[in-house]
Length: 372
Image 1 (tube, rainbow, N blue to C red):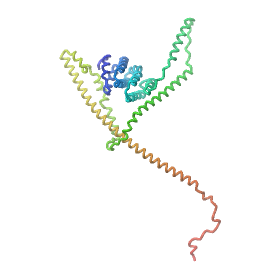
Image 2 (cartoon, rainbow, N blue to C red; image 1 turned 60 degrees about the horizontal axis):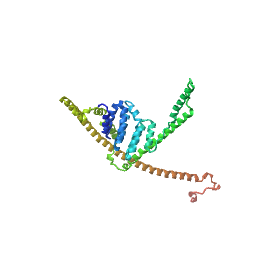
Image 3 (cartoon, rainbow, N blue to C red; image 1 turned 90 degrees about the vertical axis):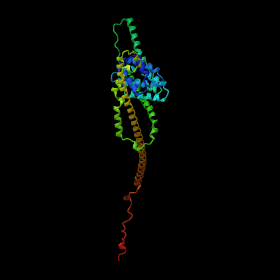
Image 4 (cartoon, rainbow, N blue to C red; image 1 turned 120 degrees about the horizontal axis):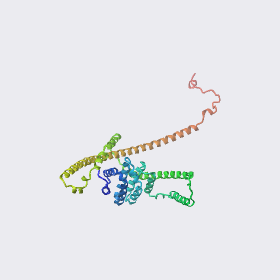
C-alpha cells in the first residue's frame, strides 16, 4: 500500500466518487494509515469545505465507513472525527441543494445513533440541526466558577499565609439531583429527536407507496426461500471480498501514476513495471467482471424483492377487506344475539300465571264424543 503524505491524501480525496468501491478502497487506505488520524481528519475537513456541493455528501459517506470499520482496529478515527463531525454535518446540511441530501444525512445519522458510533450529546446536536432547530447553548458557568474560586483562594492564602488548605467540600445532594434531572431531560429530548429522525425517514418510505398499487403476475412472485437464498448468496459477492479489495488498495503507485514513468532509466526497471502493470490489469479486469455480475445479481434480487413486496401488499389488502367484512358480520350477529337475549328476558314466566282451568274436568276426547 502506498505511503502516506498530505499530497497523496488530497489527491485521493479529489478523486473520490460516490461508488461503493471508491469509498471502501479509500476507507481501507485511511485505516491502514490510522496513526495519522488527526492529520487525516483535519485535511478531510478542509477538502470537504472546498468540494462542490454535489460532492460533499460523499465525504460524509467516507467518514461513516472509516469510523465504523476503523473501530475494529482502534478508536483513533472516532476520537478525531468527534471533534469536528458536527460542524461538518452542519456545513453539508446548510449547503444542501435538495431534499435528497437531507434524507441521506438522516439515514447516516440514524445508523450512527443505532450503533452508538458517537456520543449521545453529539448525536443529539446533529439531530437537532437536522430538524431545523438551534441546539441548546452550552453553559460554562459551572466550569469557570472553580477556577475563579481557586484563584481567589490562592490570593487570600498569599496575604494571610495560611499553612493548611481547606479540604474540598462534598458534592451537594441538590446539585446531584439537578444533574440527574438534566440527564433525564436530555435523554428524553434525545429520544424525541430520534423519533423525529425516524419520522423523516418514514416520509421517504411513504413516498414509495405508489409502487404498492401496482399489480404483479403471480408467476413472477418468488417464494420466501428463494429470496433468502438469493440474499445469502450476496454474502459472497465481489464487493464483500475484503482480500481482493485489500490487494487493490495495496497496488503500488507506479501502476497508477503515469508521471512516475519518467523515472525509468533501465530496461530492467521497465520490464519489472510491465509485469506489475499486467498483474494489476489482470486483477482489476477479473474484479470488474465479478462486480458486473454482482450488479446483475443485485438488480435481479431487487426485482424479486419488489415483486414479493407488491404481492404481499396485495395480499394484505385482501386480508384487510376480509377482516372488514367479517367484522361487519360479527357486529350484526352480536346485535342479533343482544336483541334475542333482551327478548328472552322480556318473555313472561308461565309458572307464575294463575290456574285458568279452575278445577274443571278435562274436555272429552274425539273418541268419547263419537262412542255409542
